[in-house]
Image (cartoon, rainbow over all chains, first blue to last red; front, side, top):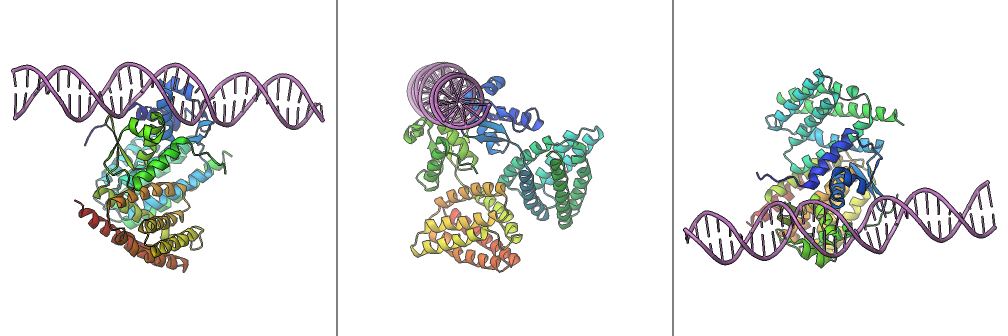
Length: 215
Length: 215
DNA sequence: AGGCATTGATTGTTGAACAACAAGGGGATT
DNA sequence: AATCCCCTTGTTGTTCAACAATCAATGCCT
C-alpha cells in the first residue's frame, strides 16, 4: 500500500469540511473566495479546487457567477438520503458474511458510542453511529459503494448540524446498533436486516419531524 | 429550474470524457498538463479543474507529483462495478412502481437499442443498453443514486473500450432488457428482478472472460 | 557494472491581472 | 412619489507567468 501525501488542496478541504459539519459555517452562508483564501492561508486557485471537491460531495452549492454557499439541506435531501441508506445498507446486511472483517469495525463503533454516552458527548455518539453504518456498507467489499456512502454520510451530518437536541437524535440508536451487530454475529442476517430497516424508518421520521419544527 | 451555463471547465470535461471513452486516449496514457492544455485551448488551471472532475468520476487516475493518467480498468474494477450494479439495480427493480415515469425511459432505450442493431451499430447499442440500466436506477427517484450510477456506468464503458467484439458484448442483452421491461410493466417486479440478476451474472462472466483474454 | 549526484522536465502552488457578470444605488423621466 | 435605466462596485471566471518541490533519467565516478 502506497502512502500518498495529502496535498494542500485535500488538506484544506478536510479543514473546511470540519468547519461546515461542525457548524461554524452555517448553511446558506456565502463563502467569499478572496476572504476565505486569506483566512485559510491558501491561494485563491487552490481554494477553488477545494470548492470543487466539496461541491462534488454535496456540502457546498455552486451558483455560476454568484459564488459558493454552504449547502442548505432540505426535506427532499433528507428523504433522498434515507432512500439511499435503505437501498444500500439493508441488502448489504442481508447478504453479509458474518465473519467479515468489517464486523470488527461495527463492534468497535458500538463500543465507542457507548463510551461516549457515558460522558454525554452526543456529538461523538453521532460520529460513532455513522461509523457503524459505514462499516455496514464495508460489508459489501465495494470500494465504490463505500466512497459514495461516505459522501452521503457527510451530507447527513450537515443536516444533523441544523437540528438541536442531539441526544434524542443519537442516543436511542446505540443499543439498536448493538442488537443488529449481535444478530449478524449470530448468523441471523435476515433478522438483522429487518431491524435495520425499522431503524432507518424510525430515524428518518424523527429527523423529518425535527426538521419540520424549524420551518 | 434555473438554466446554468455549462462553464468552460465542464465543457472541456465533456470533450475529454468523449476522447477517453471513445478510445482516442488509451488507458494508461499519461496526460501532460501543458501539452493537453495547449491542445484543448484552455489554461493549465482550468485543465486541472477538469482533471479533478474526471478523476472523481473514475476516468482518470492521479498520482501525486507524477501526473494524471487515463484509468486502467482491472479485473478488480469490473468485479466491483458489477457488485455495485447488483446491489443497486436489483432492489431498484424489485421495489419499483410499474407505472413510474422512468419506465418510459426504459422503453425508449430498448427501442433505440433495437434500431441500432438493425444498422449493426454496436457502439450505439451499448449506449442504449447503458441508458436502459440508468433508467432502472431512476426508478428509485433518488438523485444521489442516479448521479453515482452515472459515474459507475462511465467507468464500465471505459472498460468496454478495451475489449473487442462489441457485438458479443451487447447484442445478447437487447432482448433480455425487453423481457425485463415487459415483466415490470406486467407488475411482476420479482421475476423482473430475477431476470436482471441472472443478466448481470452472465454479463459479468462474459466481460471477465474477454478481459482475461487480454492478459 | 553499479551506485550516486546532477540535470532536465513536470507538477504543485502562488500572485497578479483582466474580462464577464450580478447586485445595488442614483438620477432622470413620467 | 414611483419606476425605469444606467452606472458604479464588488465578485467570480479565466488566463498568464513565475518559482519551489518532486520525479526520472542521464552521465560520471569508483
